[in-house]
Amino acid sequence: MLTLQIPTLLALLGTALMAVVIFAPAPVDAKVTMSLAPPFMPPLAPSSFERWTSAQPEVHDAWSLPPENPPHASPAWPSLVDPRAASCDAAARLALVDALATVRAPWADAILHGALDDEPDALVRDAIVAALRAAAER
Image (cartoon, rainbow, N blue to C red; front, top):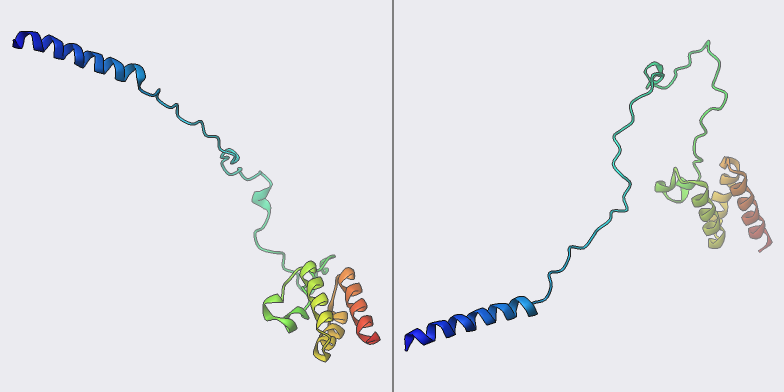
């Protein structure tokens, strides 16, 4: 009796294993990923001329000529509005002029009058003049 059951059990087990192999889902291929970052490049070697350039800025003594284009310091008037705005760019100064013109207060007009003398950028100066004219008309 046991001799007939063992081959039957082995046949059923083989059939079950074949069913798993046939009907099992196919393995999923690994996703191909692509990096959009630029390829790694080692730092460039210094050129042969860089060894003669000084890392220190040039120092001018009393006998040397002054530099042709002296570095222009940023205007000081934005720091009157907020100390953190001391070194802001021209776009931020235009926004400050617009905000001061919107405030319409005597202290804002005083800052705009001071800014007119201190401002190096022509576009910002024109905006200051327009704001002062609008303040004079009201």
